[in-house]
Amino acid sequence: MKPADLRRFILEYTDEVWNHGNIEAMDGYYAASYVHHDVSRPDVTSLGDYKQWARDLQSGLSEMRVVADDVIASEDGKAVKRWTATGVHTGSLAGLPPTGKRVSFSGSSAYRVENGRIVESWYVYDLFGLLQQLGALPAPA
Image 1 (cartoon, rainbow, N blue to C red):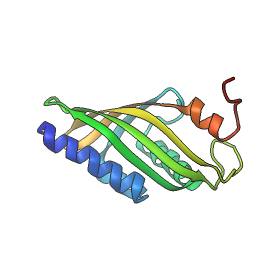
Image 2 (image 1 turned 60 degrees about the vertical axis):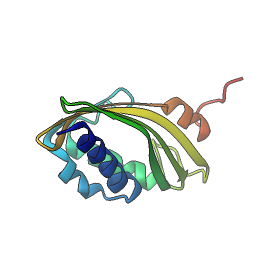
Image 3 (image 1 turned 90 degrees about the vertical axis):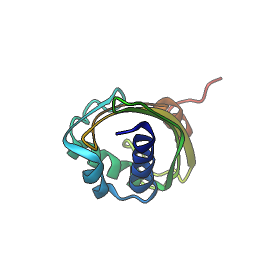
Image 4 (image 1 turned 180 degrees about the vertical axis):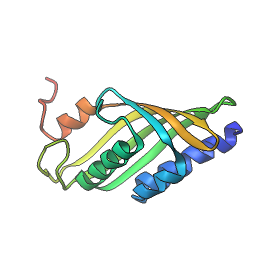
């Protein structure tokens, strides 16, 4: 996949799944053998687990939007997306009851794409900052 096509693929995936809430669309973007790496959620190890995690996140954060602040793609099928997510905490999230608070957090995702499908990804995001916004952790002094 050419870098411009890969960049467009990542942007389309982000919009369809995260901004339109179409979790089932993941089947068209991810390989069945997908591997997920996320230090904040080591229990997410398969596409099925990842889809459930996405459902849980979307049910906890209404009005969820993910903006791709930057996407860099290369000839070898690798891409990196720097992103910002926003939403309103209206459902249980990470075991926390709804607070009604509007939250914003950012992160980066690196993808490895083969044959038009994401086969592996690495996520790093500001979970600490999100938990502070939800009142689960104290704000810095």
